[in-house]
Image 1: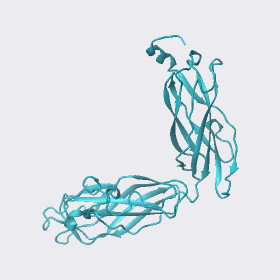
Image 2 (image 1 turned 60 degrees about the horizontal axis):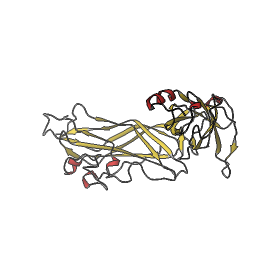
Image 3 (image 1 turned 180 degrees about the horizontal axis):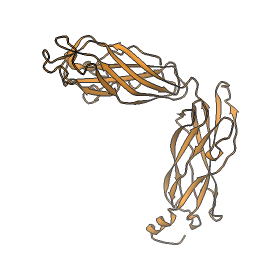
Image 4 (image 1 turned 180 degrees about the vertical axis):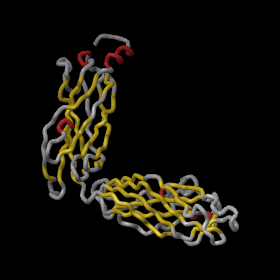
Amino acid sequence: MRARPVSRRLAAWAAAAVVIATGTVMTSQGAGAAHRQTYVGVPYELAGTTGHVFYISGDATGLYPGATVNLPLTVTNPNSAAIQVNSLTVSLSATDHPACVPDATSLTTSDYAGPPFVVPGNNGQATVALPLTMPHGTGDACQDTTFTLTYGGTAVSVEGTPGTKTVTIGRYGQGNRSFHPGSRISIGVDVRLGSAAPYPVSIDVRNATVTMPIRCSNGSTPAGSPLTVAVPDQHVSIPLNSKRWSPATNGSVAAGYQVVVSAPNLCQGIGSGALRNAGRDVFTGTVDATDTPMFIKWHFAIPVGRGFADVDCSNPASNPDPGIRACRAGWSKRVDP
């Protein structure tokens, strides 16, 4: 290789790129598990291929000797059922410069071997990044070369039935609690599977709100009641073989609270100005799960209403594991969406 300044060498190699090659389509049945279809990954150029397949696409640029770049591979699932992708393979098959040999001396590829991930059906997608490395000793013959890669992979259908449903949980409460304006109200949501699954499952809780009827100290209902609190969207990944509640396993820890708000001054000028929550609180939200059945529950804590200091129960610094008494709150009934 001719000696040259590094800066010129980087510029000369920057045009090297990666594209996809076509592959062979195969379908088969999962050995020892006839109720679960086996799916084979093929390059996206074969989209429209019939059979139990999923599509893989992706490319990268910026290769030069000694460089490692990420190759983002997007998996598209055209099947109606969700799939669990167990492996993805990448192999170098050709170059557009005959003098640049398509082997590990020119470019080294990496496969994906886990952890498994779930891709929803009906053209759902997921992306993983794999490293591509051009060895330091790659010769000048590979400058401005396009490398052709072949993609493959394996997946199995996800047992159970993916689904989406709007749920309502309530009325729920913790007795007749009195608290002052500005008191912190911490709210959290928990989910788990109905039975442990031998593959990871994704559960999303979105567009959720909690409504809390408020009374003033004289028993009147103020304007602004019920108080409505928006709960941030939650994405929970349930590990394979897990039946534990997520993200929390008890009703005290910070992970069990995802949002905290300050009580508004709804009773200003009414009675003592204090607020009361009589326990007729309702949670509503939409649940998306890549496998069902599953369960969802919620809870809230108003430490001041129980005689404790004003604590943000969602903050691990003020509510360290395993959770303080002020943040101890029972869960609502669990609901199977």
